Image (cartoon, rainbow over all chains, first blue to last red; front, side):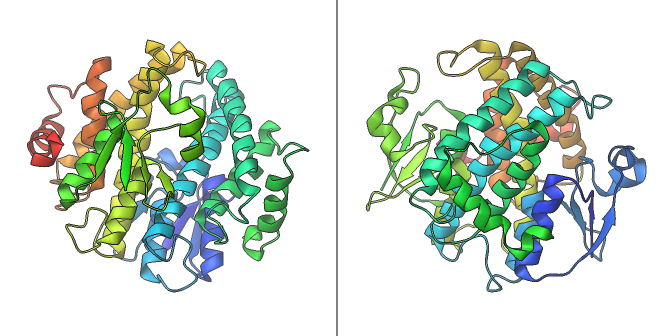
Amino acid sequence: MKIYETSTAPNARRVRMFLAEKGVSVDYAQVDIVGGENLSEAMRAKNPTTKIPFLELDDGTCIGETVAICRYFEELEPNNNPLMGRNPLEKAEVEMWQRRAELHVMLPIGMCFQHTTGYFKDRMTPVAEWGEVSGKNAVEYLKDLNDHLADSRFLAGDYFSIADITLLCALDFGRVMKIRIADDQTHLQRWYEEVSSRDSAKA
Amino acid sequence: MKIYETSTAPNARRVRMFLAEKGVSVDYAQVDIVGGENLSEAMRAKNPTTKIPFLELDDGTCIGETVAICRYFEELEPNNNPLMGRNPLEKAEVEMWQRRAELHVMLPIGMCFQHTTGYFKDRMTPVAEWGEVSGKNAVEYLKDLNDHLADSRFLAGDYFSIADITLLCALDFGRVMKIRIADDQTHLQRWYEEVSSRDSAKA
């Protein structure tokens, strides 16, 4: 099997960090998304949405979407350092925080990047005002996360999960747009230092 | 336990349809989101994001996010008409299609609604141009879904799943913005007729 990715892309890092936590080793192939390699006919045949990363299994089956790739490896080895929850309630709480990290931080930061930098303007319609609003929405939500982390070591309580991986990768990518944890967000800062010091954060 | 929802909201319908498929009966409490009941201090204490639906367990624990609520019930009864996959590969494929239905159809249709109608303009910054682009993006993606459904009974092959529920609820909500399946999208139309005729679609 092989994962097609672009090593600098935040969603690619999410998958690498997840697999590093689980101790799973996979081959990677680099895709030049800036040059549009992902848009070629050959790549579209494998991956019609053209988004990276995606996983190609040995029989040719392709799985796209970051969390779907993570889900596959989690379900193959559910007892090997589970990162998506260990019981029904924890699975639901991880899903909740993973989605909040994604919908309120990762996605708006991605929107801010795409709509204010013009990076992919050859293949989408940038709306600069929306990019700016998105960046502000992400910054605003960091206040809620700081409040939550006042009483919680990780996003889902004492349990390190895929939700923390998503938030870390989103925040590190946010630096490109100068989106940073505020000085008075000490709980979020404490969380950031702990999560970014894990070995998997270098994957 | 109790689910707080607004019966006309598309995400509330996703949860009701999911639970109807599983034959799970839960009490519901209606929340007046137009009047801002979800923004009250009492409701924020339960549900800081203020989004509906959310699930309150008997011990007071609250689970927000549509898919997290579904995940909870799926994991409580994984063998009762599973809707999120029955093996690692199927779970990954369901996750992939659920996310595509959500990120490429439900979310842009929701953006189109919020940013073009001004429905929640008292609590967000509408960007009309973004709303229009979002609507167009959703319409564009229906072509890809039609192609996919030429060879696939449901989104994840022959297996009815949460992904189909998300897509149905998104498309029905899209009618508000006059987003409809095109006449020549016969595969998507065939899928729509089958899924919307399920008893659970009336939930």
